[in-house]
Each structure stands twice: as structure tokens, then as C-alpha cells.
Image 1 (spheres, helix red, strand yellow):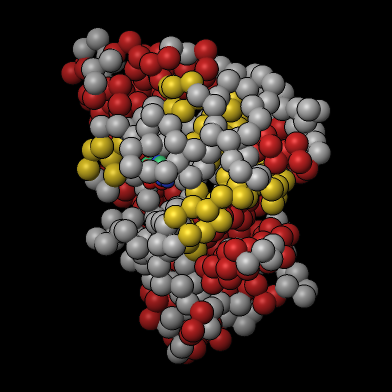
Image 2: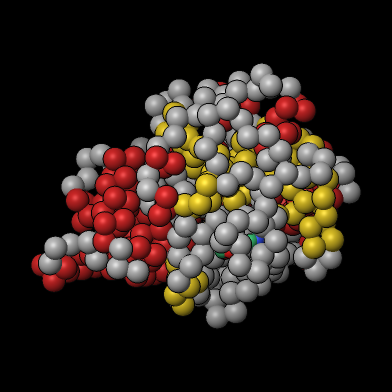
Amino acid sequence: MTFNIPFDNTFAQLDPLFYTKLAPEPVAAPKLRAFNRDLARILDVSEGETSEMAQVFGGNVVPGGAEPLAQLYSGHQFGNYNPQLGDGRAILLGEVVGQDGIRRDVQLKGSGRTPYSRQGDGRAWLGPVLREYVVSEAMHALGIPTTRALAAVETGETVWRERGYPGAILARVAQSHLRVGTFQIFAVRGETAALKTLTQYAIDRHYPEAEGPMGLLKAVRDRQVALISAWMGVGFIHGVMNTDNCSIAGETIDYGPCAFMDVFKSNRVFSSIDRGGRYAYGNQPQIIVWNLAQLATALLQQMEKPEDAVEEATEIVHAMPALLHEAWLNRFRAKIGIEGNDEADEALITSLLNRMTDGQADFTNTFRALSDGPARDQFADPEAFDAWESDWRARLTQEQDPVAVMQATNPVFIPRNHRVEEMITAAVEGDFAPFERLNRVLATPFAHQEGDMDLARPPAQGEVVQATFCGT
Ligand code: AMP
Ligand code: MG
């Protein structure tokens, strides 16, 4: 075996309390379907023989230096505390320090059963694996913090959901897989020493400048503020913002029934399991505050006198809505070409968004059309846009280069649901050309790409995807 990943593991050196060491379950006939050379370069992973990489990313061969393990965590799912979750179908192979000096986890998702699998089969099917590959890489290209996709393998086995599907594994890369739920489980169990170890580990790994548990809380808050406002700016709906899917490093993690909006609607939900709309587009800024409050509660359990720190924790959490609002406002200012700030900007933005909802306007294409034109064509009633446009043009006279600001903020391409679903259907039939095309086009989402503009087109009536199912 010449394929080499330069592992340098730290999590596996922590107390076994935090994980179970075990190897991935081998698969029947692994076939490499994707390998991300750009990411491999950053990680300092050189490309191996296709067959060797298929064996490694399929879980059949544990590469040298790996210390495979499943991580333990818990979390609030749709608001209810589940006392034990954990990697039920994922194995952390180990960590690598990239050429950029950043330490990252390399994890296999869909790699078989673990002690935390509960009723699950430990597997994933090709559809969700390719969706996560495409969408996470698109997020990265959009400049939004996210886990990334290093490789995708088909297992040669059948995975049973509503029917049989081709099984697959995603090799996922993250700054870490520490979640709010990783802290919750030890806090709820009253395992203070473990909680302290974990807190120090997270500080050392992600926020070396942070002081103590409250410093960590504040650092996570600030990263999540940046993350959620970035999601809002591209119309992204995560779909399952449970505390176990909320990363301490502030990356988008666990792409399940996620989606980008086409027509703008603040209460838009895609996840078929989110019946109450808890994780609707417009609720995401509230939910992240709720999640941070859970982290605060967990971190407090390690304080000598929690009552002394409650006030500080409360202040950190209470400051979050205003920070989110500020970040949201600045992002949407940029979307309409504004770098400065004026009292009236918020009303201008809200007015546009309301007109977009009323006019059934496509979120991505409307914003892009503000710089590239014609935007009025995006609205069912173009005159509603005309009325807004004159106020907006008047505001832009105070700006230096609004077109450049808008073109750097508003993508031409997003992974549109109907294209993602079409890509999955083709891949299940053995045709990976749409998958490769999406990856290529979405790698430069801010540029017009002649010959691929059909991927910027919103779904026609019959193409609209109403829900993404959780049968992942
Ligand atoms: P999620 O909502 O997808 O982030 O998953 C929640 C929990 O369910 C995590 O602990 C997962 O590891 C676990 N899980 C999801 N799908 C499976 C599966 N097919 N087999 C075993 N565990 C799973
Ligand atoms: Mg999860």
C-alpha cells in the first residue's frame, strides 16, 4: 500500500471515556466515485492508486497511522434531549495537519455499525453521500465555513430505506467533530472532570486565545453568528439544527435534509421530518441562540461555583440576537451593494424581501440580477420592484462600487434542489456526469459560466422539490 495519509492524532489520546475504538466494517466491493484533489493538496494527502483509495475510503483497509474510533455525544433533537447519540455510522480515522497549519479530522460516514448505532444499520446510501459531497463543496466555494468532502465510495452493497439503494461512504473532513452535544453528555451525567478535559481540548484545538469555559462559549458564539448569517445570505436551510449537529468549530456540519431556497419565503421548510417548522429558514437565527444556551448550560457544570458564572454565561447568550441581527444586516447590505451604513438600510432590505415573497421571486437570481439585470423580470408584478428600485438607486449614490460588492456577494450558482435530485437519480443509474458537472460549476459560483447557465435556472413548475427526506 503506497497511499498515505499523514495522520497526527490527538483525540485518540484522550481518555477512552470520549469514544470507542473500533475499525470500520469492511464492505463487499468498494469503488471510488470521487476524490477531491484540491482538498487533498491542502491536507498534504497525495493521490494513491484508485483501487487503494477505494479500499481505504471504503473502510476495508485501515491506513497506517489511523486510530479509528467512534465518538460519543448526546444532544437535543427537535428540542427534546436524547441522552445518548454518538457516531452511529461514522468512524474517525484520525487527524491531519494541513499545509495551512490547520488540524482536521478525517472521518468515514456510512462505515458500519458502532456501539452507538441504536436501531440504525450504520450505513448510508449513494444519494445523501453525493448530496453532502456537492453541497458541502459548494458551501466552501461560496466562502461559508463547512466540513468538506475528500472522497466518495460506492460499497457494492445494498442499503435498505424505502427500497434498496446502492450503499456509499463519504470521507468527510472537518476542523473537528466536536459538537454542542459532545459537551452536553458529560454535563448531564455530572462527569465534571471529563467536561473540563473536553473544554481544554476544544480551546487548545480551536480557540487558543480563549480563556476558560466562558471564553470558549463566547468564541463559539461569534463563529456561529458568522456562520448562520452566511447561511441566511445564500438562502440555505440546514434542516436539522439539533445540538448534536452544531459544531464547536463553527462549521456547517451534517448535511441531511438541507436545501437552498428557490422562491423566497421566510418560513420555508424542506425537511420532511420537521413538521412544526422548527428549523425553517427564518427561524435559524433563533435556534442557534437556543443551541448556544444549551452549550452555556453544559459548560457551567464544570465551574467551582456555577452560580458565580451564570451571570456571565447569560450575558454572552443574551448578546447573541443583537450580534446576529448586525451580521445579518451587514450581509444583506452587501447583497444590495451597500458597504456603508445608514439608518434606513434595514427598511430598504426588508421592503425588498417582502416584495420578493409577494412576487414569488427567486432568491439567488433576484439578488444577482440587481447587478447583472434585469431584476424586475424576477417579480410576478414587476412594478412592485420598480417602486423599490428608485429608493435603492438613490441610496446607492452614496456608495463607491456597488456592482463589485454585489457580484462578490451574490452567487450565480447554488446547488439547486432539482439539480441535486436529478444528479442523484443519474448516479443511482450509474451516470456520474451530472455529479461531476455540478462540482465543476459550483467550484466558481460567482462567475457566469457560458454553456452551464441552465444550472442557474430555477425549477420549472414540475421540477420543484417540495421536501428532502431524512432517509439518509
Ligand atoms: P443525524 O440527525 O443524521 O445527525 O443523526 C442523529 C444520530 O443518528 C447520530 O447519532 C447518527 O450517528 C445516528 N444515525 C443516523 N443514521 C444512522 C444509521 N443509518 N445507522 C446508525 N446510526 C445512524
Ligand atoms: Mg448528526
